[in-house]
Length: 238
Image (tube, rainbow, N blue to C red; front, side, top):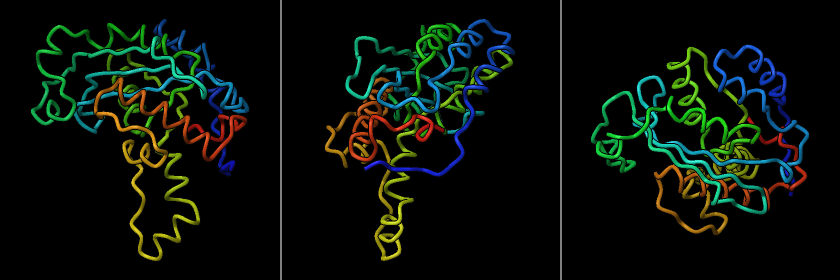
């Protein structure tokens, strides 16, 4: 079943082209110049990369990125051999709570590169691909704020948010609203629970590379069950 969404499609093509002309940092200029798939591109033809970050907290202005995982994929195939994973040294001291949550310790970050040291590699791996995340309100603001703090200019780009897609289906649809009206609790749209709905295997969470892989597989399942390989990316991205 093809799910349709009647919202205005962001003009990411023009935005990225404009940023490519205005970017002062060469790494950002190359990233923006690579652009993104046109909004009418079928999702089955789009180059995709799943992205996940572990952070020291949830506030991008007060907390820091400590690890980044990337997994390139298509609807038919995950490409683990091209995956990338970085532990990066945060600008603030790790708290006991964050170590417990993501298991990245003071020893792990002692010799880790700073974000600026791997930024070129990160942007190169993302360039020209459509990023897929589970909850864009972590990955998008954290990277934007972190890059802006270092370079004086941020980085914002289109993303497909698998949590948002789950919300459309299991929280915002007429069926979901009716279930809540008759007393059913809202469906969980967390990564673990979302994967379980499609029969995907459970993975240990809160590791950036594993969660990126889990997100890639979740999008593949979502498209297979609710959309179509012909679905335009512009109806899926945010």
